Amino acid sequence: LSLPLALVFAWLALRAWRPVARVSWPWAAVGAAIGAPALLLLHLLTFGATDYARRADAIVVFGAKVNEDGSPSLPLEDRVRHALRLYHDGVAPRLVFSGGPDEVACMVRIARADGVPEPAIEEDPDGLNTWATMANLRHRRVVAVSHYYHLARIKLCAGRLGITCSTVPCRMSRGLTREPYFVAREVAAFAAYYLLR
Image (cartoon, rainbow, N blue to C red; front, side, top):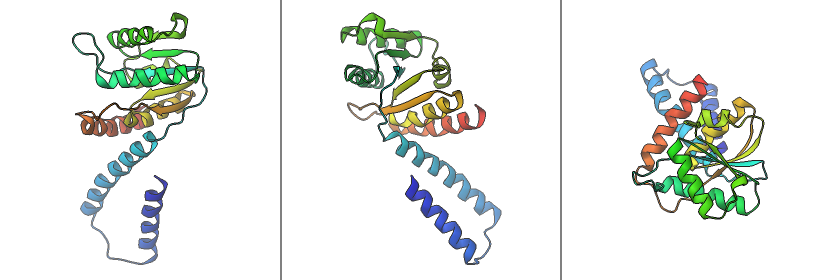
C-alpha cells in the first residue's frame, strides 16, 4: 500500500508545484467518490494478504455461515481448519470460537473431531459481529483468523478496544463464488466502523 500512496502524494505535490487549470467541484467530487473507495480497497487487500501470526493467549476464529444441514460452509471450514493448524503449531494454548450459536457449535464440533481437548476450547456465542467478538476479548493477546478481506476491520476494532491482536488470513481451499460481493461489503463495513465506532 505504501507505493500507491507515495505515487498519489507525488502526483498531488506535482500538481501543487505546477499550476494547472482548476478542476470544477463536480469533477473533484467524482474523483473523491472513486478514489477514496479504491484506496480503501487497496488497504484491505494489502493488509489482509499478510500473515502476522505470533505467540498469543488465544486464537480467535470469526464465524461464518452454517449450512441448513448443520455442516460448515466453505468459509467457516477454512477459518476453523487454519486456526487448528495454528493451534497444533503451538501459536496459542486456547481456541476461541466466536459467532452466532449455530456457528460456534459447528466450530466446536470440528475442533473436537480434530482432537482439541475441552479445556482448550472457549465458546463465544455472543460474538454476533466483529465489534462484539473483539469486545468480548478485552485485555488479551490474540491471533485473529478470518478471510483476508475481513482482517483490516478486525485490527481496527482491536486498536480501538486496546487489544493486542495479530491477524492471520485463512488459507482458502478454493475461491468463493461470492468473493467480489464479500470484498465490496467489507469496504463499506470498514468505512462504517471507522466512522461510527
